[in-house]
Amino acid sequence: MAKWNYVKIGDVCTVERGGSPRPIDKFITDDPNGINWIKIGDATDSMYITETAQKIIPEGMKKSRYVQPGDFLLSNSMSFGRPYILKIDGCIHDGWLVLRDNGGVFDKRFLYYYLSSPSTYQKFKNMAVGGVVNNLNSDMVRGVTVPIPKMEEQIEIVQTLDNVSNLIFLRKQQLAKLDELGKARFIELFGDPLGNDKGWQKALIAEVCNAIFGGGTPSKSHPEYFAGSIPWVSPKDMKSSVINDSIDHITEEAIAHSTTNLVPANSVLMVIRSGILKHTLPVAVNSLPVTINQDMKAFVPNETVKTAFLLYFFKAIENDVLAGVRGVTADNIDFKAFQKRTIIVPPLALQEQFVAFVTQTDKSKVAVQKALDEAQLLFDSLMQKYFG
Image: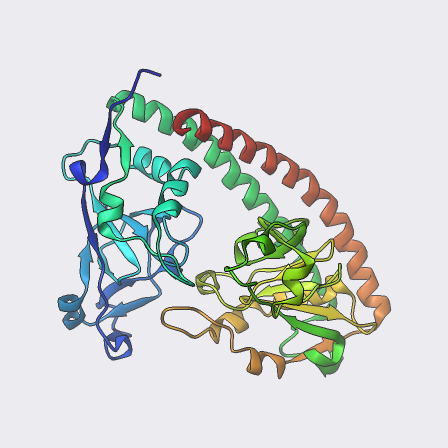
């Protein structure tokens, strides 16, 4: 690679903060011709934002920021520093910054990859300010340096990263299809879990659990709490149906001084608060004891249900659960209402038949997951090579 020239983002891009009309509920509309209201929860694993869950009335534009296809969005709070490319127009709230490459010096995908690289994220993290929630502001982002390779080099880098990124996407699709196979087998054996068309016994979810744990965050004023070896699972770790580790780890002392608990292995973990709940209900089984943060719940099944059965029961009622997700700035499952739900309790012999099927499917998942991990490792090494 030729030596790159570096400039400040503010020298080549316009950087502006979003705004929110308040109270936002008065501006939300069901009119399909309304203006797209772009929230963090509308972002997915893709580099693009293509649709929104909500719209606002035209009057809301006066107190917000209008954005257009091709603009960059950068989250400036919560999961700060995450970039996305817009394929739609709409309005953004103050949890977003918009970046406009007015001079066309970037291939948009190149800027996306650079802004999403670990080295750039570390720059954002070092600058972010705040108490419980870290924030970026426009001036901070304007001061971040970015490389400007020749356009042909940008395109070459992008094509290489896109090829590996597409492979990662295909592996994730394979895992999703295997997951769908498990759901289909669940319905075949047990019928519709909501309609209970096979007449199984029913119980409250709490009645089939030895415990239901909530989570918590140890005090950030004690950084030593986060220097342990006990996995501390949060929504960002819930990327597969089995949790073998987590990004963050805490100490036994941290558990003693927070509201989180040690969750035994072979429990079912669920995300109850996250923007991702607009799209999916992340649930997983932990293969080792873990702790969880406040955006999670953990279900420890008793002798009446098998862990795999409970996991796939939650997967089977996913759409019904997501239909009740509420929240404007954060998306939440109403957990009090969730605990009042009933669960079908088929005979253990039939559950064990399902577990045997899932065990075989999981073997295929392991092979696909290995290929996914290898592709991810290649992608990470390329990002390190290009962006340091």
